[in-house]
Picture (cartoon, rainbow, N blue to C red):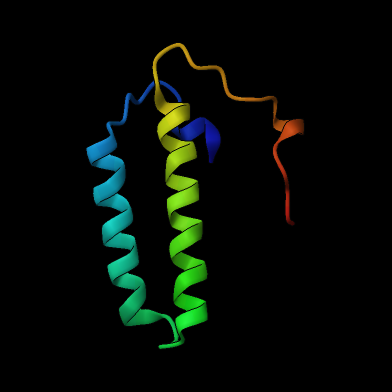
Length: 71
């Protein structure tokens, strides 16, 4: 997933809009449980910030061995 964002030059506005759409969709498809919704929202914001960073021209993401793998 990290490699898919390299050199895409995403903007903060694109990141924020994508996160907004994902979070809005989650309200419709995930359980109506505040804890589940909050955890999903946190994960999307966290991941989208990493994607934004990885997308900047010249940025070299960490080696695959440095990225957690949850199986």
